[in-house]
Length: 263
Image 1 (cartoon, rainbow, N blue to C red):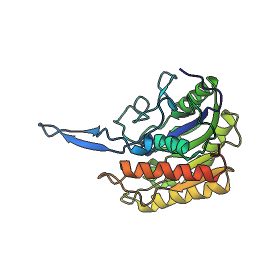
Image 2: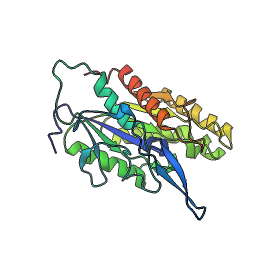
Image 3: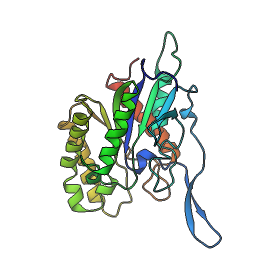
Image 4: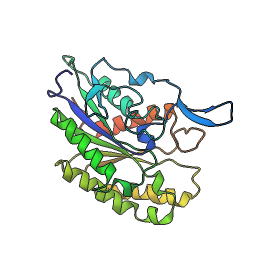
């Protein structure tokens, strides 16, 4: 693999299924009536980048050419589709105005999101948290600079009152632990406010969304983009490919607005 030290920027992609990506997922009905989910294979044009310029850390902790689905070997319990990460990275490179266009690896994505997970499952010391920290440290050992955590999670905490009530405190604690364990106390974090209009308990969704906004007052360098209103698949919870493309661009706009995205 080409040199990943000079100017190589690393981004963590974490949370649950809408970060790992379900864009383009189709329901396949077999002759016996059973169903399965399969990605349609359509990659947004916004994912296009120079070969070798965007890498992803695979399950073996090795850098490889980034591609959709970004989480194909990470979020393995269900089929993955398009997420926001690759659109974000490719669009970031296009947004920059270089005097001399760099060659070789420029951005590294560290996919860590796992579908159907609650914030409790991401607590410090638990499997998912440890896995994310381990993967990020492995990426950094190969060279480069950690630039941001992109975080999209919360639907699993909007299913019952007790989870929603404790979400803010658990979220703030999670962000603080991540920064401490990565020795990066000013790490920019961009979280996505959840979009679940057909939830069985909309009051819990609103509670989680309020907690996501309230966390901004307690965690410095924390930013938020809102997925509310983005188009959903027929399951009424997962973003379509078009929505994931829009979300990737929203994340990019927010990242650039922090001042971190300048070349």
